[in-house]
Length: 59
Image (cartoon, rainbow, N blue to C red; front, side, top):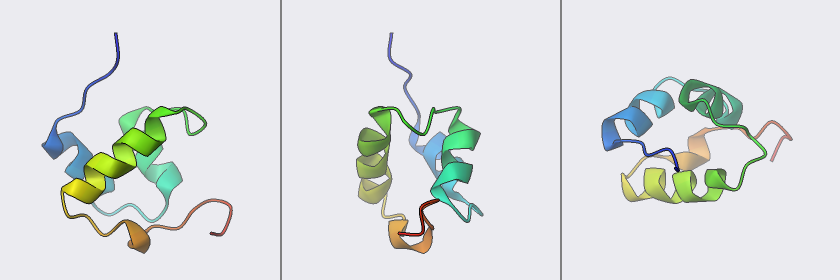
């Protein structure tokens, strides 16, 4: 069964994070999993500033 996150859980994981790795760690998501794209879309829909986070690869 897929893991579901509430809007509040996504906002909480995003709050204060400096990198995507921190967000994935807070959510317990393997950073190499396909779920990342889905979660990024959900966070964008919540109006979170996704460009404020750094990618571990420096992108």
